[in-house]
Length: 231
Image (cartoon, rainbow, N blue to C red; front, side, top):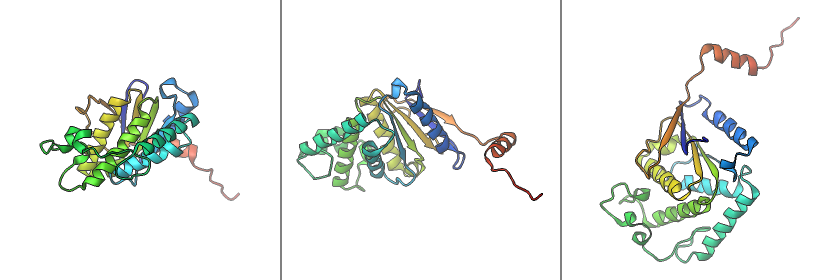
Protein backbone atom coordinates (compact mmCIF):
# COMPACT_ATOMS: atom_id res chain seq x y z
CA UNK A 1 0.00 0.00 0.00
CA UNK A 2 2.89 2.36 0.68
CA UNK A 3 4.45 1.82 -2.75
CA UNK A 4 1.34 1.11 -4.87
CA UNK A 5 -1.79 3.16 -5.59
CA UNK A 6 -4.26 0.39 -6.38
CA UNK A 7 -4.14 -2.93 -4.55
CA UNK A 8 -6.75 -5.65 -5.01
CA UNK A 9 -6.89 -8.37 -2.38
CA UNK A 10 -8.18 -11.41 -4.27
CA UNK A 11 -9.63 -14.51 -2.66
CA UNK A 12 -12.65 -16.73 -2.36
CA UNK A 13 -15.53 -15.74 -0.10
CA UNK A 14 -14.97 -16.59 3.55
CA UNK A 15 -11.16 -16.56 3.51
CA UNK A 16 -10.93 -13.46 5.68
CA UNK A 17 -10.32 -10.63 3.19
CA UNK A 18 -12.41 -8.16 5.19
CA UNK A 19 -10.70 -9.08 8.46
CA UNK A 20 -7.27 -8.68 6.86
CA UNK A 21 -8.27 -5.32 5.37
CA UNK A 22 -9.51 -4.12 8.76
CA UNK A 23 -6.22 -5.18 10.37
CA UNK A 24 -4.22 -3.33 7.70
CA UNK A 25 -6.30 -0.19 8.20
CA UNK A 26 -5.81 -0.36 11.97
CA UNK A 27 -2.05 -0.74 11.47
CA UNK A 28 -1.94 2.32 9.21
CA UNK A 29 -4.19 4.42 11.44
CA UNK A 30 -2.18 3.64 14.57
CA UNK A 31 1.00 4.85 12.92
CA UNK A 32 -0.52 8.00 11.38
CA UNK A 33 1.34 7.54 8.12
CA UNK A 34 1.84 10.83 6.21
CA UNK A 35 0.77 9.18 2.95
CA UNK A 36 -2.73 8.78 4.45
CA UNK A 37 -2.74 11.80 6.72
CA UNK A 38 -6.39 12.64 6.03
CA UNK A 39 -7.51 9.22 7.24
CA UNK A 40 -9.04 6.05 5.83
CA UNK A 41 -12.35 5.78 3.99
CA UNK A 42 -13.68 2.25 4.58
CA UNK A 43 -16.74 1.47 2.43
CA UNK A 44 -18.62 -1.83 2.79
CA UNK A 45 -20.00 -2.68 -0.65
CA UNK A 46 -21.66 -6.08 -0.17
CA UNK A 47 -25.14 -4.72 -0.93
CA UNK A 48 -24.08 -2.20 -3.60
CA UNK A 49 -25.64 -3.52 -6.81
CA UNK A 50 -25.05 -0.52 -9.09
CA UNK A 51 -22.55 2.28 -9.62
CA UNK A 52 -25.04 4.75 -8.18
CA UNK A 53 -25.46 2.77 -4.96
CA UNK A 54 -21.66 2.58 -4.63
CA UNK A 55 -21.35 6.34 -5.01
CA UNK A 56 -24.06 6.89 -2.41
CA UNK A 57 -22.18 4.70 0.04
CA UNK A 58 -18.93 6.57 -0.59
CA UNK A 59 -20.69 9.90 -0.05
CA UNK A 60 -22.24 8.64 3.21
CA UNK A 61 -18.88 7.46 4.55
CA UNK A 62 -17.17 10.70 3.52
CA UNK A 63 -19.60 12.66 5.67
CA UNK A 64 -20.05 10.25 8.58
CA UNK A 65 -17.03 7.93 8.90
CA UNK A 66 -15.32 7.97 12.28
CA UNK A 67 -12.08 6.88 10.58
CA UNK A 68 -11.67 10.26 8.88
CA UNK A 69 -10.19 13.25 10.61
CA UNK A 70 -12.66 15.89 11.80
CA UNK A 71 -11.04 18.47 9.53
CA UNK A 72 -11.41 16.12 6.56
CA UNK A 73 -15.13 15.61 7.15
CA UNK A 74 -15.64 19.36 7.56
CA UNK A 75 -13.88 19.94 4.24
CA UNK A 76 -16.24 17.44 2.60
CA UNK A 77 -19.32 19.11 4.10
CA UNK A 78 -18.14 22.53 2.96
CA UNK A 79 -17.48 21.29 -0.55
CA UNK A 80 -20.89 19.60 -0.76
CA UNK A 81 -22.52 22.82 0.45
CA UNK A 82 -20.67 24.83 -2.21
CA UNK A 83 -21.87 22.49 -4.93
CA UNK A 84 -25.44 22.64 -3.64
CA UNK A 85 -25.35 26.44 -3.80
CA UNK A 86 -23.97 26.34 -7.32
CA UNK A 87 -26.59 23.87 -8.54
CA UNK A 88 -29.07 25.31 -11.01
CA UNK A 89 -30.43 22.32 -12.88
CA UNK A 90 -32.13 19.14 -11.75
CA UNK A 91 -32.32 19.25 -7.97
CA UNK A 92 -30.22 16.46 -6.52
CA UNK A 93 -29.31 17.20 -2.89
CA UNK A 94 -25.64 17.96 -2.33
CA UNK A 95 -24.60 17.93 -5.99
CA UNK A 96 -24.10 20.51 -8.71
CA UNK A 97 -25.50 20.53 -12.20
CA UNK A 98 -26.47 23.18 -14.71
CA UNK A 99 -28.29 23.39 -18.01
CA UNK A 100 -25.32 22.32 -20.11
CA UNK A 101 -25.65 19.15 -22.12
CA UNK A 102 -23.82 15.96 -21.30
CA UNK A 103 -21.58 16.57 -24.28
CA UNK A 104 -20.45 19.90 -22.78
CA UNK A 105 -19.34 18.15 -19.59
CA UNK A 106 -17.73 15.13 -21.15
CA UNK A 107 -17.65 14.59 -24.92
CA UNK A 108 -17.71 10.82 -24.46
CA UNK A 109 -21.17 11.00 -22.91
CA UNK A 110 -22.68 12.13 -26.18
CA UNK A 111 -20.63 10.01 -28.54
CA UNK A 112 -22.61 7.08 -29.90
CA UNK A 113 -19.37 5.62 -31.22
CA UNK A 114 -17.89 5.37 -27.72
CA UNK A 115 -19.27 1.94 -26.89
CA UNK A 116 -18.06 1.84 -23.29
CA UNK A 117 -18.68 5.49 -22.42
CA UNK A 118 -18.78 6.87 -18.91
CA UNK A 119 -21.53 5.09 -16.92
CA UNK A 120 -22.17 2.87 -19.92
CA UNK A 121 -24.48 5.42 -21.49
CA UNK A 122 -26.68 3.53 -23.88
CA UNK A 123 -30.25 2.98 -24.82
CA UNK A 124 -30.94 1.16 -21.56
CA UNK A 125 -30.33 4.14 -19.25
CA UNK A 126 -32.38 7.26 -18.71
CA UNK A 127 -30.68 10.63 -19.18
CA UNK A 128 -31.68 11.83 -15.70
CA UNK A 129 -30.03 8.81 -14.10
CA UNK A 130 -26.86 9.51 -16.03
CA UNK A 131 -26.89 13.15 -14.91
CA UNK A 132 -27.49 12.17 -11.29
CA UNK A 133 -24.68 9.63 -11.39
CA UNK A 134 -22.28 12.03 -13.09
CA UNK A 135 -23.02 14.83 -10.62
CA UNK A 136 -22.52 12.57 -7.63
CA UNK A 137 -19.24 11.22 -8.98
CA UNK A 138 -18.02 14.73 -9.78
CA UNK A 139 -18.77 15.86 -6.22
CA UNK A 140 -16.92 12.90 -4.70
CA UNK A 141 -13.85 13.35 -6.91
CA UNK A 142 -13.86 17.08 -6.22
CA UNK A 143 -13.88 16.42 -2.46
CA UNK A 144 -11.04 13.90 -2.70
CA UNK A 145 -8.87 15.75 -5.21
CA UNK A 146 -6.56 17.39 -2.66
CA UNK A 147 -6.66 14.71 0.05
CA UNK A 148 -4.07 12.16 1.16
CA UNK A 149 -6.47 9.29 1.75
CA UNK A 150 -6.77 5.51 1.57
CA UNK A 151 -10.08 4.44 0.00
CA UNK A 152 -11.05 0.88 0.97
CA UNK A 153 -13.82 -0.85 -1.02
CA UNK A 154 -14.74 -4.07 0.75
CA UNK A 155 -16.55 -6.86 -1.12
CA UNK A 156 -17.30 -5.46 -4.57
CA UNK A 157 -18.20 -8.83 -6.07
CA UNK A 158 -21.82 -7.87 -6.77
CA UNK A 159 -20.67 -4.89 -8.84
CA UNK A 160 -18.27 -7.03 -10.85
CA UNK A 161 -21.03 -9.46 -11.83
CA UNK A 162 -22.73 -6.89 -14.05
CA UNK A 163 -20.67 -5.65 -16.99
CA UNK A 164 -21.94 -2.06 -16.98
CA UNK A 165 -21.37 -1.59 -13.24
CA UNK A 166 -17.92 -3.18 -13.50
CA UNK A 167 -16.93 -0.81 -16.30
CA UNK A 168 -18.34 2.18 -14.40
CA UNK A 169 -16.22 1.24 -11.40
CA UNK A 170 -13.06 0.99 -13.50
CA UNK A 171 -13.70 4.35 -15.16
CA UNK A 172 -14.45 5.94 -11.78
CA UNK A 173 -11.13 4.71 -10.36
CA UNK A 174 -9.35 5.96 -13.46
CA UNK A 175 -10.85 9.44 -13.18
CA UNK A 176 -10.30 9.52 -9.42
CA UNK A 177 -6.61 8.66 -9.76
CA UNK A 178 -6.13 11.12 -12.60
CA UNK A 179 -7.55 14.06 -10.64
CA UNK A 180 -6.61 13.00 -7.10
CA UNK A 181 -2.86 12.29 -7.17
CA UNK A 182 -2.58 11.42 -3.47
CA UNK A 183 -5.46 8.93 -3.27
CA UNK A 184 -4.75 5.22 -2.83
CA UNK A 185 -7.29 2.41 -3.18
CA UNK A 186 -7.45 -0.97 -1.44
CA UNK A 187 -10.11 -3.30 -2.84
CA UNK A 188 -11.39 -6.70 -1.73
CA UNK A 189 -12.87 -9.02 -4.38
CA UNK A 190 -12.98 -12.60 -5.54
CA UNK A 191 -11.23 -11.64 -8.80
CA UNK A 192 -9.05 -8.85 -10.11
CA UNK A 193 -10.59 -5.74 -11.62
CA UNK A 194 -8.75 -6.11 -14.91
CA UNK A 195 -8.32 -2.34 -14.98
CA UNK A 196 -5.05 -2.12 -16.89
CA UNK A 197 -5.14 0.34 -19.76
CA UNK A 198 -7.66 2.73 -18.15
CA UNK A 199 -6.14 6.15 -17.40
CA UNK A 200 -2.72 4.54 -16.85
CA UNK A 201 -3.94 2.80 -13.69
CA UNK A 202 -1.81 -0.16 -12.61
CA UNK A 203 -3.50 -2.79 -10.47
CA UNK A 204 -1.41 -4.78 -8.01
CA UNK A 205 -3.14 -8.03 -7.05
CA UNK A 206 -2.44 -9.94 -3.85
CA UNK A 207 -3.99 -13.40 -3.71
CA UNK A 208 -5.21 -14.67 -0.36
CA UNK A 209 -5.26 -18.46 -0.20
CA UNK A 210 -6.61 -20.88 2.40
CA UNK A 211 -4.59 -21.74 5.49
CA UNK A 212 -2.62 -24.93 5.63
CA UNK A 213 -3.97 -27.54 8.04
CA UNK A 214 -1.15 -26.83 10.49
CA UNK A 215 -1.77 -23.07 10.50
CA UNK A 216 -5.54 -23.58 10.72
CA UNK A 217 -5.11 -25.74 13.83
CA UNK A 218 -2.75 -23.20 15.38
CA UNK A 219 -5.26 -20.40 14.75
CA UNK A 220 -8.10 -22.48 16.17
CA UNK A 221 -6.10 -23.31 19.29
CA UNK A 222 -5.31 -19.62 19.77
CA UNK A 223 -8.83 -18.27 19.28
CA UNK A 224 -11.13 -21.05 20.48
CA UNK A 225 -12.23 -20.89 24.12
CA UNK A 226 -10.79 -23.60 26.41
CA UNK A 227 -12.89 -26.70 26.75
CA UNK A 228 -13.99 -27.26 30.32
CA UNK A 229 -14.45 -30.94 31.21
CA UNK A 230 -15.90 -32.57 34.27
CA UNK A 231 -13.42 -33.69 36.92
